[in-house]
Image 1 (cartoon, rainbow, N blue to C red):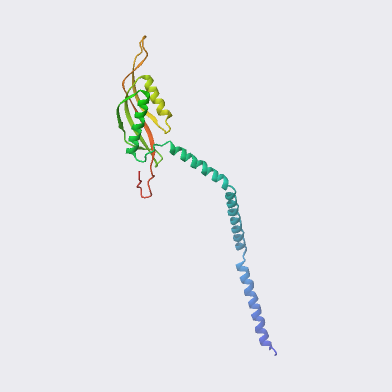
Image 2: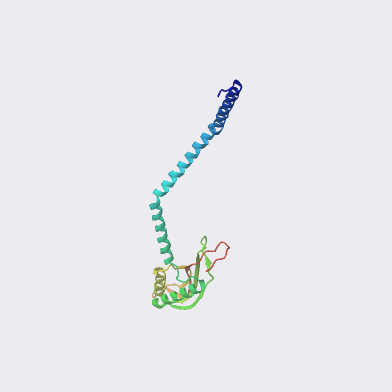
Length: 200
């Protein structure tokens, strides 16, 4: 089958047009800007991969830190009063102080719970305080304070009012009665939820 000159001309024109379109499409889809974007994407992915490898490599380090933090939390919780509401904790603190007084030869003539207080910058701790009025000797007071300090829960004498009688040559300084002090302990409560309501 013979191709006429006119058909050859149309065929050549079609081939040239197809090649031109192909060159144009190649030039526009693989422009230098796209190459730079592709290089930047590769660099970003490599950076992320390096960071992930670094985190995986430090897994043991972070696990150890988590374990230390959990141990610290357990130790701190063990220093809190066992109750989880302020009324029960106040009653327990009064009982503890009464036990200390009995062992120290101290008489508690009055005791009362003070208002609970939130610990600053900590939504999960509440301070429970009890005020006691004591009838005691200086030695008894020292023993009572030592018992508070050595107790296995964290207790703190927040305030103490004491008056003394001036010493005379024949006798040592004596405590003028009554003596009062406030002693605080702490309890753990649930921090407020997102709605702003917390449960003690």
